[in-house]
Amino acid sequence: MKSFKSHKKGIEASKWIIDQIQILKLYRKINILDLASGNGRNCISLAKPNKIVTAIDRDKIKLGKYSKFKNIKTICFDLETKKKWPLKENFFDVILVVNYLFRPKIKKLIKLLKKNGYLFYETFSRGNEKYGTPKNPDFLLHDRELLNVFAKHLTVLSYFNGNVVEKKVSMKQRASFKKKTSY
Image (cartoon, rainbow, N blue to C red; front, side, top):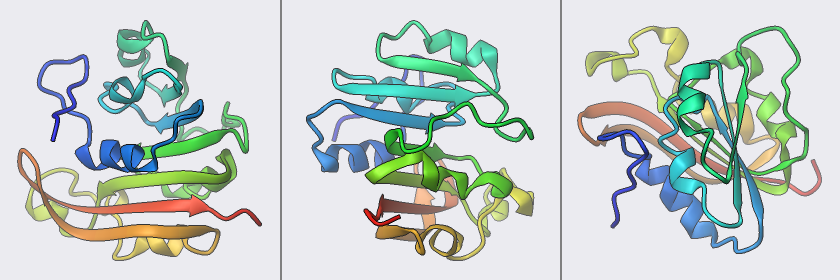
């Protein structure tokens, strides 16, 4: 399998995220949201013809490093603020969240998805504290938390909670969902 490198040497896109997008085989133009995009490791790998990526992060310097990419629109915004999110509801075909968790607004993601849109969520879960950061329970998912948050409104396509070995061992949850047409 190909290694997906971002613009920054040594930083690879999440193989799981890239695989999820490739499985969809969406050939039409799609709008992707990369929530808390950080260094752009995922959005840069996905910014291809017919894939328009909106990268949102609070770090203006990081966003500036990849705002020059043709298919990436950047929004500098602190997702944890009380200000209204600058994102359109029912706009995104795909939303990705990698290594980010802010529980007070997690359910807002559902309304950002178009009908039949996909949510791919991958972040650290309880047990990760023995392998490294984050150790703070505020940033670690509880067992089955992604399912508990999203399964009522989204169809569960896949779910995993366990050890992931990439460059080092970590404990993660990975879940993919599809928005129900009736929501």
